[in-house]
Image (tube, rainbow, N blue to C red):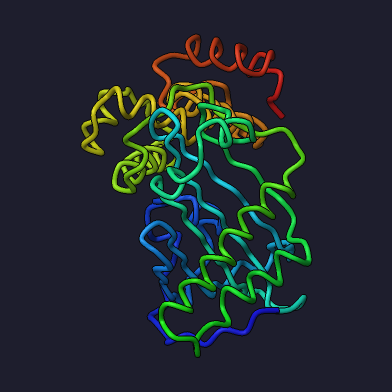
Length: 294
């Protein structure tokens, strides 16, 4: 297990922040960041180490995750996230994030990249993978360079980071999860991804409202077309699909609470009429709302 020395920082609740990027989504909204260290390995490779406290009911399991964002034609931004628990009985974990910026991939011939998953997909990709022995060893090498001269340290960290990417790609054997949308150049900017995830949080926090793309775009200050495409790329569903599924999932829960009527649930979730609610419910679940009443 890794042993890192961090300068303490104020405890920050990820839940209180917007889910801005893959790292925060990877940790979960209930995680608390206890310590953070940001490393700039090269101009094209960035790393971040965190110690986080996770909820007690979280299943203690080390894991890694790969995120690939197509930005333009044969231009990519790739992020690797790793989570390792300090020990089996602890709720504290060490999280490492590695970001490979688009210029990093310019050094490789296009045909070399496009011949391998996930680069041959013109779609946003998210894939989970286990932490093998070699991955754990490389994470340790990435951390244990504090006494080296600056340039030697950068070389060592670069080598470890590249090897970690190789291991991640080799560990992934399951089919890739991807979104059927064109590459979105603006997703290269974290500020734009932040706006999309802010729109997602607005939907999740206000299930009693049906949000239009125009309304959301105004609230997050983003072009409607960009929001529409970016939301599909990052979330995997259209805005309409996402909010409809959340509302119907909540409706199923309410319908099984004693004393709730179909009209009560429709009103609680902001549907304009019972018939509108019933139609939406049946379209998604294949059942009438009254069939779930307790």
